[in-house]
Image 1 (cartoon, rainbow, N blue to C red):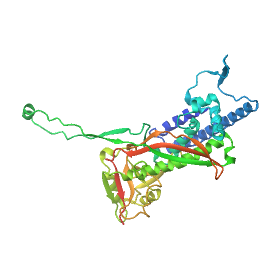
Image 2 (cartoon, one colour):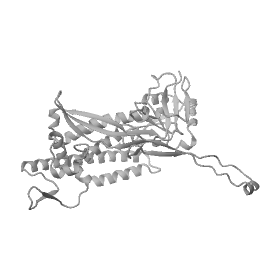
Image 3 (tube, one colour):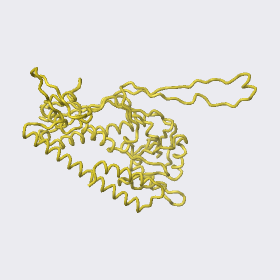
Image 4 (cartoon, helix red, strand yellow):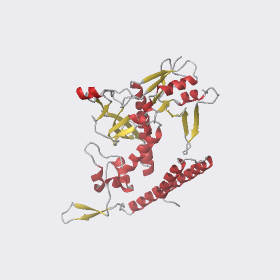
Length: 403
């Protein structure tokens, strides 16, 4: 059986092969099948490794000595110890180890953590930070939860960071040799501006029952990761689309568009041409259409003069549907209004380069715990400081409905 490293290497090779020119459908089907097999094999290896790690931890606990990568050497002076480390281990690896994650779960349940782990876990404002493994799960699920989050740009700077913006000060002008010799060249300055990011708290509190709190390490991690990722993923994606900018990120629908297109009362081929023409030429590369999935199927019914549909649905290597309208990729989201339910002049779609929207995380997700006496649940509360803005709206086109 292949190792995880070999599997990841082969998956990258498959992706490269699928993007090569001249690949026929039979080859793509074979690559897709092999990708599914590799994913299944990787999942089996991870599951097996997790089970083995838990068994080793259980055996070590029964003999009264938890297995850790440390040796505590007692010095002559009592109640003082020096921690000696076998080999070299970075802080990230310490936090990602099964031993630390077990200690972290024990801390979340009892409030107690061994001295060697406390040194890397304690912070000034919180009792502990989420172990790397749990945090990685949260980030991964945020990226795979929605269709918008993977396409925006990310920063991780302290609150108050500014992103410079500018445009060409004035156009170049034609002149004559005589004017050049007598009056010279006028010097224009370059106008600059900036977009400043704040830091808005995004919070999620999870209550786990007594039974859930005494489950295994993997079950504890899954409960935290699934609840936090689902709640924060929905909140972030909703804010990217229509955030008010007050106490939360500023949504794309709150920006001032470069152009606005109003659809005909009866959708037809000319509507698509109007939308395509409205996107500035400099912003067409990488631009996507963002809309509700139901709205896309409304466009799917439109045909050209030859009776051919102007929209299409294909299937990617991962089995997920890929939407496209007249050569422009469509990103679907539930945070946009459905065309059929929208009112007159409502924005039912927009065209934009999503990488022009920036999410800044001023403080990564942490974790504090407390007991809710009324329900006897133990509450795990996570907080993150986030802001987001569209830093360049010159390619933004709103598509509005006409009754």
